[in-house]
Amino acid sequence: MTAALHPGGTRSAVAMVVGSCVSLQFGAALAAHLFPVAGAWAVTAMRLAIAAGLLVAITRPRIRRWSRRQWRTVCLLGAALAAMNGCFYAAIERLPLGVAVSIEFLGPLVLAAALSRRRTDLVSVALALTGMALLGVEAAVHATSLDPIGVLFALAAASFWAVYIVVNARVAQSIPGTDGLAMALAVAAVVVLPIGLTQELGALLEPQWLGIAAATALLASVIPYSLELAALRRIPRHVFGVLLAFEPVFATVAGWLLLHQGVSPLRMTAIGLVIIATLGTVATGERSRRARAAEETPAPLATPAPT
Image (cartoon, rainbow, N blue to C red):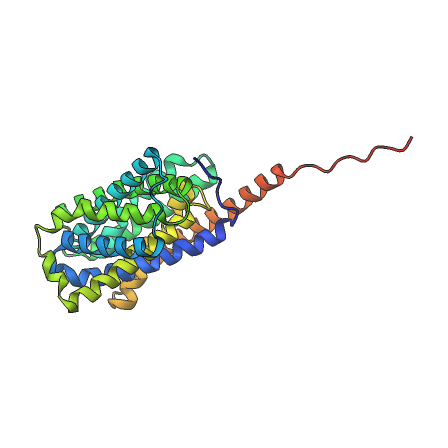
C-alpha cells in the first residue's frame, strides 16, 4: 500500500526537521555524559529500549492486521536504527561531535544527490556539501587528533543514515501514524541489546543515571524520529536529505552555546552555505508543489456559445 505525500507542503516539514535536529543535539549532549559510566553501545541499548517502551505504550500499535511486507519493512527500519545509532554513539565517544556529525551527514547528502532529478536540487546539495566540508575541515583543524576507528564508525553511521531515510519513507507510506516507528524501535533495542550487555549496561539502572537515560531516549529518539516520520509524509526523500543539513549546523550552535566552543569565520561561512541550500530547497519544493496542484486542478467547462 502506498500513500501520496501529505498536502501540508514543505514549510511544515522544515519546522519538523528543525525541531528534530534541536532535540537530537540536546539528546547527544546528555548521552555523552553517560559514556564514561556504561559505554556507547550500552547507552544506545538503554536509550532505544526506553524509547520503544514509551512509544509502544503511547501508540499501542495494531500489529495483528499487518501484512508480511509491512513487518519486513518495520524490521528493516529497526535494523537500520540499531546500526545507525550504535555506530554514531561509538563515533562521538572517540571524535569531537562536530567532526562526527559532519562525516555522518555524507550519507543523506549522497542519497539526496542520487535521488534528485532537478538541477536546482543538485545545486542545493552541492552548496550543503561544501558547507559540510568546511565544517569538517574546521573541526579537524582544531582537533588534536582524529581516532581512525571513530572515523570508520562515523562513515558506517553515514551509510546507515541513508538506509534509514529510504526505509523510513516506506514505513511512512505503508503504516499510518507512529505504529511502525514504535515497533521499529523495539526491534532496534533487541538488536543492540546483546552488544550493550557486553558493557556496563546495568550501571544505567541506578537512579541518577536512569533519569538521564530516559531524557536521552525522549530527546534523541521519540521526539526526533516522530517528527522525521511526519516530515517524510510531506516531502520527497531527496528534499528531506538536504534539509537534514540542519543537523551539523545545530551541532555547531549547540557547541557554541552549551560547550562554549568558539565560532570561527570558516564555521559561519559553512553555516551560511547550508542555510542558503536549505532555503533554495524549500523554495523550489513549494513551486513544484503548486505547479503539480495547478496541473491536477480540472479546467472549467467551456460555456457553449448561444445559437
